[in-house]
Image (cartoon, rainbow, N blue to C red; front, side, top):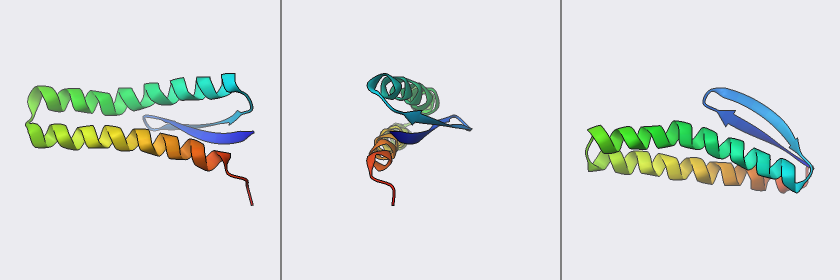
Length: 80
């Protein structure tokens, strides 16, 4: 069993994941939050800004994904 924090824009919720279905639900909710925040920023940069802004927001999207994956990994480690 693992606990993970799901950040949805500026809201934080902790959920306990004890099975595959719980994990799937966490992943869906986390992906929605990432796309809502970072994907919107990327779309705006692509529409209104230059290549540097697009690259910066694309990197932020990638970092948000990495952070979510590390959050899961850290939750799988045994608690001391």
